[in-house]
Length: 303
Image (cartoon, rainbow, N blue to C red; front, side, top):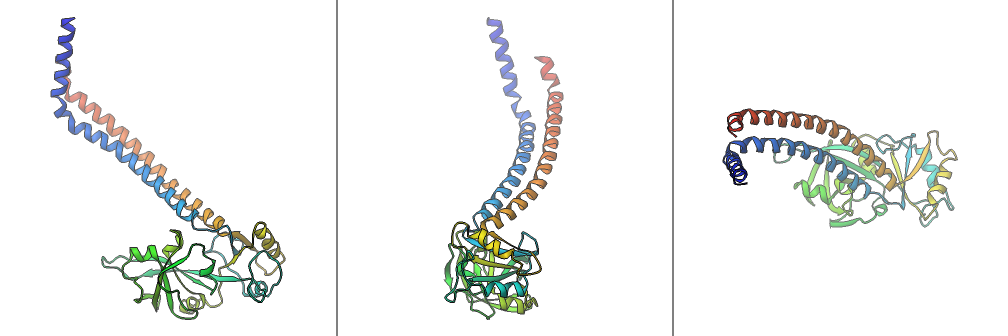
């Protein structure tokens, strides 16, 4: 019994005294594994965050009409004939109406623009959204946090609060050049932390004139009246208002679909990279372990 205890103490003392030699190897092994885990967690967090922002951006009570058989704003196109036919309608078609009984809608289009270089010389591409007079009122949770909204027909813009916080020169009252036109920033707005806070808004006609997109409308936004209203609206759209097919979806469904595609793409890149790094970390750990054993040959033989 005494001999066993003595051997145990000798082995424990030898291992403790050898910790200093093994510290660097052990830290390198732990860091290589931790790096692989961090890369995977980063990609998954990016995908989950993107999904969360877009999922919270849409409203179930707002319908978005898309044209051309697409389910994305960027590929949609709605003809002037279809817009005139919708605006001329009266009666119950599932959407809110104005005082004259016509559907209350906002014709909208999105233009990607590059902001001027900031203090560190970096440019940033953002979405400039042109909308009709009813557009701001069709955004749930919208609050003008500073200044005011843009005026119809003027070269004025309202900037999302999140975008304004990231880019200091987008302050109220300043002028920024987008495309070939200078725009006056009239206000900042919040929208419940949704993706709208990363956009810049202006009047649709002003955007068309500035970027030579006369007559183009990508989407129409309308406020639904209640349950079953979306089905009623789609039934009207199937009556052949235009040559191209028209389809209405809720704003929440539109952004949920976009978030799913983008999140899947992030995961598609993230998992292979993480798996490759995991193989590399495993190989590094095995190599480090073999080096550690080789380095301790005398110590092991002595024991």
